Image (cartoon, rainbow, N blue to C red; front, side, top):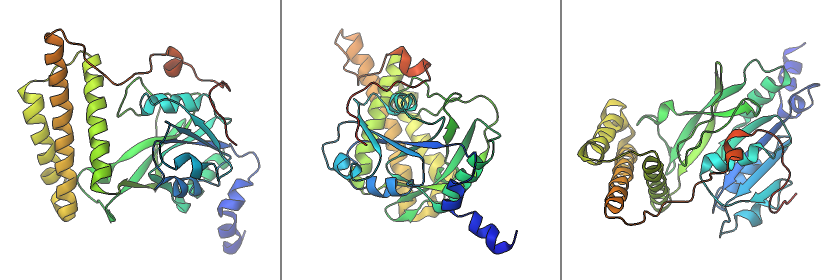
Length: 301
């Protein structure tokens, strides 16, 4: 095979046509992502199926998504893990690639994924590293440089744990890291990121409350301070300039909010008041069963 023909064989179009290739379904979870959804979908149009589950967006997310030849569903949001497990049980293919709407699959990553699936995959799942973009700048330190997530896996061997926030898929066996990156536009503007931080803190506090955890001076005072020191100085966020200062400051603030919220929950509980928590998905099939169930609200092809 000549160098030219070898290079040509590695194009996305040719890799899609490899005989015996494992097909892949892309799962995208959304809520009010009109700024991101088109670019996210377009980055995975090479996939065999794109399955989008939306949490009743009030913006144009669904209107934009329906312009593409994809499957769309709507479902109440019980946390990222619940949405993804629910989707895993409804896609057509055994191999899944899970994305958030603010992520993009680069052409190099797409080729790498198709090359893996073009042969018999050696592993049950794969880590993918993320290049995090904040306000137009790639963050190279602050703890973000080592960011990696399990996003490509065989659905019979992967399941998200029952957590409202910060849940990564459980897979037995070795999990290698792919060479190429996801591009993650985590910070569009301060308002958007602050809202995300507030949601994560609220959900994290609720998760900790359900687990019976408490919050004292160490959690409310020391943990946020240590998070900032670790990310800004030890993980060299200081080298990311003002962007790094904002990132590390918001990370520390998010930890403070989580434990302050948990502290408040415990006070309410001690006073005999009802503690209002976000709704959790307590349906056992969301966490235990892997299989196809075509039932559910609204399907749009």
